[in-house]
Image 1 (tube, helix red, strand yellow):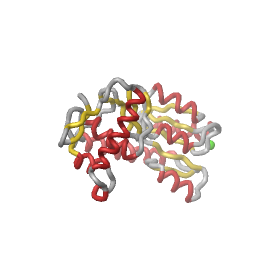
Image 2: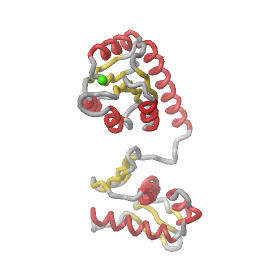
Image 3: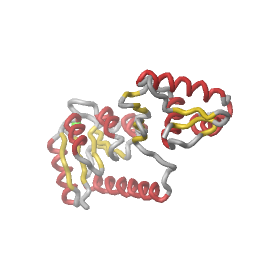
Image 4: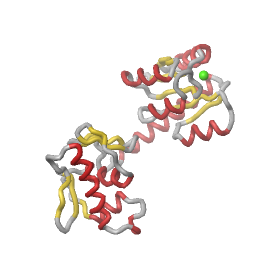
Length: 231
Ligand code: CA
C-alpha cells in the first residue's frame, strides 16, 4: 500500500521540490501551506508521516507539532540550523529533523528510516500486547497522549496521581486492585507513600466524578481489599 506523507510547508518552491521527490520515490503526498490547513486535513484523512516546517505563517510549527504529534510520526524542517531549534525539536519528541537547505533524497531516506522504526515498534507492541489499553472504557475516555480522562463526555481536572490511579482502574473494569497494587502502579515513588494515601486520592477522584454525575459512583470499595471500577 502506498504510504502517505503530509508536507506542511509554506514556501511553494520547497513544497514542490519535496512533494516531487517524494512522489518519485513512491510516496503519495498532500501539501498543506499553513498549520491550520494541516490540522484540518488531519481531522479528515490519515497519513503515515508528516514533514513539518518550523516557520509557518499562521501557527508556530512547534504548536502544530503539539496538536498533531499523537496522530503520526513527524519530521521537522528547520531553516535555522542553530542547536536550540534542534534540541527543542527533539525534546518535544519529534521523530527526526532536517535542516534547510536539504537534499530531497536525504529527506526521503530519513522518512523511510522513521517509517521502518515506527513499523518495527508497532510489530513489537503487537507481539507483547499490553494488559489492555482501551481508549474508551465504560463511560470513561482515556487520552493517553494528553494524559487526561473524560467522564461522561466531561474532561476531569485530575492531578498526575489521580490520573494514573483512575487510569489503572479504568483499564481493567471489575478487577479488584489492592491498595498496594494501586500504589505501585500509580505512584512514582510508592515506597515513600502510605497506603492510606490511596484512600485519600480515591476520595478526591470520587468528588470530581460526583460533580459530573451525582447519581452514581463508578468506583467500588472492597472492604479489606481495595478498589475496582464498576463493570
Ligand atoms: Ca517557512
